[in-house]
Image 1: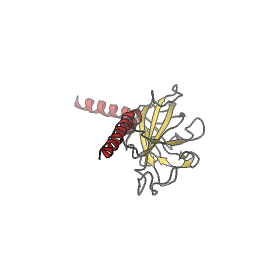
Image 2: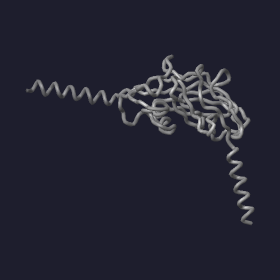
Image 3: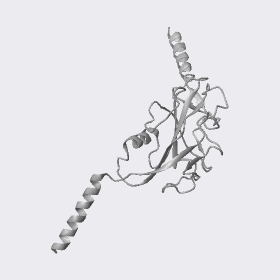
Image 4: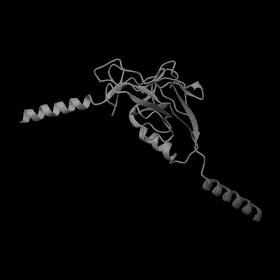
Length: 215
């Protein structure tokens, strides 16, 4: 009986490992990440006051997926599921999310091998956060610290790819010519103070003027 349970457990684990597809989550010299048309600098360059000595901590990228019938993406990112995360490399405008020993594929949770899926790549500067949950919360709700720091954020157009089984490789790339994701552009965002903040500042200035006049 115990042997049967062990076999069943192993079979279940094997089915789970093959229950998600793998893709190549890295761009090329022709599919650069950019900011207003300029390729993002390498991590050895200080960006937004952030400097990385190797390959991380300047920009992060989330790979989102949806069934092949999704076809569209908007600012709400409704209908899209988080699949994997990547970061910038030492090459200008390049990113990678590869985590396998061979460095050629990442597992995308929820996808099915050999089944076409839609993909979108979301990128942001590290001063937004280091994981997708934090970045998504910032995008949906704004910066809770209410500061005026410059941040970068961007959502790619929709591309398609065919995730493959983990034993397969090299894996199909998310970035590339149609139907792949062509490129990604990050835009600058500065949190504007709320109207109430301006009102308080105005009241403070008025109080200062009254105080000076009385003196």
